[in-house]
Image (spheres, rainbow, N blue to C red):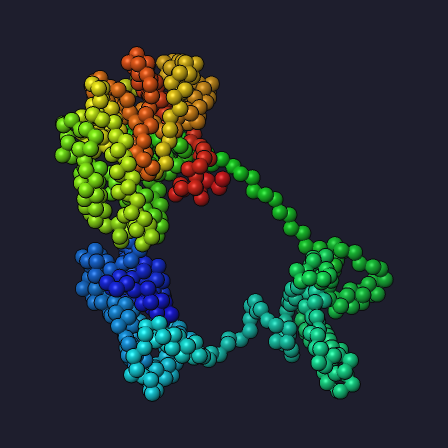
Length: 631
């Protein structure tokens, strides 16, 4: 516990915040978890549950934790006695060791910390005598050594001070009395002398371990040692042989285990052979039987272990009644492009995330935070374009100074300095304005901005049912009399291939399925198989249904005349990747109908498929439920 506290203080920031992993290491320690207060009828209430609450808040926060903010978040759920106890932990674990400047103050802190644990540990120290002995050694030996020396009041840098304390702690030893030998004991060969056992297992009984390879002494070789009357290899082997045979004679049952034919890693070393003592025991048994023993014949048994590779299986979940009811609630509620995209990528992930509502473990993100960066860039763009709502925007209307000011304000508002690593934060501050300026230079002008961060809701008729859809449009504008939908992307772009819209056979197959599929009745096995094939073909050829969904919603909401939708790649130079590309108005109307067909197939698959399968892809690496699929 003291080592964990020292590590915590070493990573403390100048403004008094603590690294979350080191803080959890301290809060997980049993000494702190077993602290408590006397409850009703004198029954102690331990601090374990309270510390678990703090852990959840820490895991949802940033990399460095401010204790006051943490207590402000959780103190309203705690009693005054528990808050007082937590204040004691803050004083003895977080505050005093960080502010100590010499050995006398460190010794005083350790003494007060021990007294704090003794006062609030209830009967913990009676039940753990070895820990109590360690506490006694700290108070009676370590603290006087820290406080009673000629350097006790000399100030040291924090690293030097902690290293001195660590060295003194590591030199301390805690004596204890072993319990009587019973059960399973792991022992060395010499420890077994004059002891008797019911059953003995001698592992790795190879000749290089039993009796062992003699060490080469260039100054006193073995032949010279014998002439000088010094212990030699022969005497050592006699000692080992006596120990081995004495152990076998004092045990009811003895098992030797070894590996044969295994090449050693050292250069020029041969293969392992069984010990010469084992050879002697085998020879004695062969003489008694009058026959040679072969491997697999008792008592010379062969250990067999069959190792088979685990076949990769695709996780599959049958559509149970509970899942069917949960899916019904999803389909009768508000659908979104993100929800359909999740199902299109992997139905099993959709089931675990939306139907079963399994929540992944909250963990502090110590790497880059793409979501926070994306929100910051979106906010900067909103502030840049907001003055031009319902106005004509031309090239050069937004100056570089205005762009820089909007980004700086959004950056400070997002508090990215606390969320991102220092290197990533510095890189973002330097590169984001450059890329935003490139984006402004590549904007289509003139244009008229109609809406920014606009919430859109629409009712779509897919098959014979109507579904409520909702979404959020990053930007809606009018170009040359046509309405365009733009969606900002700070990550990689999932591009649509323009050849997709000209594949008449593909869309004819989809339309026939949507037209003749028995949406109100029970489909047959062949109809479900056809639906699954079409669904997987859409999954392979359509990277995302976000833009098709926005276009279908805009058409249902009477946005007219609709032109196109595009993804804006902000991570490079602001280039737009359109959904439809170069099409005339008639071709766009057909493509718009095809967008509705995509949504119809996905919804039919969600409503009628009797099972949900995991579909392996490049998204498995970032899926929170990948470990459950065993792919």
